[in-house]
Amino acid sequence: MARLGTSDTFLMLNYERGFLKIVVVAAAFVVCLYYFDLYDFPILSNHREALTRLIQVFGTVCILLAALYYVYPPLKLERGISVIGFLLVSISLLAWRRLFLRVSALPQFSERVLILGQSRLAEALVSELRSRSELGLRVIGHIQNTARGSGNCSFPSGEEDACDELFCSIEKYNPDRIIVAMDDRRGKLPVESLLRLKSRGVSIQDGPELYEAVTGKISVGSLRLGWLLFSPGFRVARSLVMYKRVCSVIFSSLSLILILPLMALIALVIRIDSGGPVIFRQKRIGQDGNVFTLYKFRSMINGADQDGNHRPAEKMDSRFTRVGRVLRRTRMDELPQLFNILRGDMHFVGPRPFVPSQEQECLEHIPFYRQRWVVKPGATGWAQVNRGYNVTLDDNEEKLSYDLFYIKNISVGLDLLILFKTAKILLLGRGSQ
Image 1 (tube, rainbow, N blue to C red):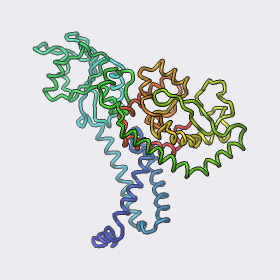
Image 2: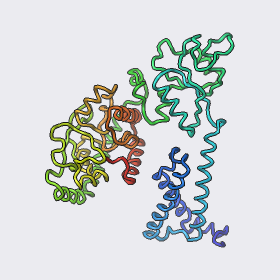
Image 3: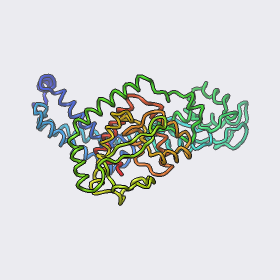
Image 4: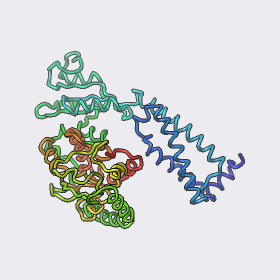
């Protein structure tokens, strides 16, 4: 125990790489907690699942630190300190997450939110906010009819006085925030009532803005041309385009040099396993609707889509070859796309390109679908890390909502976040089809 004395502690922190050792251990825990989804509220709310994953985190951290200490022994913590530290961390993590769940559920720590309007967006917001108490927004009501004196509000109108019925209804429930989620606001938005409430300290927020902030996507069903035109975003700076192109050339070139032996080995295994070409070529729609040829390692039997009728892959698809099934599960079939990135057909990050027939179907049935063509497609994207595999039109409409969010908020930081999430998905083997 003398090792934990004041003088020894000072020496260890300042002269024995103590601070660096602490940073390494803390970083290992943070990364593992993230990769095991222990920052996701749905996981935390399931106590058994959270405990199971926490045990997995400790096991993974032990393996990582053991490997690191073997490679670089000076970073090694003494056994006694390691044991005490791990005990303190385990108790603290369990206690802190339990405290967070209890505090986030208390109504006094939440804003009182009133939803105004009748629309798909309003219903989606009510459902989203009520299922996510960690946001600190508690829905106290939903007024669907905003007509003056209509008497069809979700709440009783109260006494008649100088203010209109809608103002009295809203004021009676004393909201901290009002979310305006109306489809058509022309002549229907109660501007005077909302201004009076705003002057009294009530926050007035646009529904699409809040929906985008809490879900990471844009509600396609509530989109209007005016919003696309006047909202911030949906403009890619020329400097960002140049930056993405330079990074694409540099990193795709380096990646191809490093993994060329692996790609040669994969090509040999494919040729031995099944007859036919090693590389699968397929037409895809890129920026501005232009067609380009996408390269992948062939994972299906030769001629699987020879009739031109593209059928999305399924988990137990009989078209997969033995090697192809492994390639799809590990995503190594997509390695030849580095050539597409080097050529300039794609970036590392962007909306995922589809075949022309699928793009045409989406264009005919999904509003504003053409907007996803304003940027180059990518090998991975915001929709891929959040939505996963898409088959139906409804899936692709949901995918578009994420793609539009990416296009609106495109930045270097968002690209790095997507790449980090992609690495997490690849390591954990999720979302493959």
